[in-house]
Length: 63
Image (cartoon, rainbow, N blue to C red; front, side, top):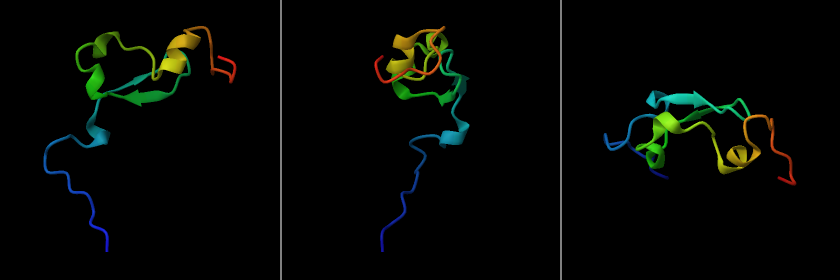
């Protein structure tokens, strides 16, 4: 039987992380450790959305 992962206080529950809405696609995304330093400046959920920009909407396959 596989053992269930036990969070021993090392990381907060994902539901407790701060969230923002992507300005490109409009989907919600949660805080990531790599954004810890500049969370206030993060606007996009992914590199793909960052490339598409604010007026882009959903990024197509050719983006």
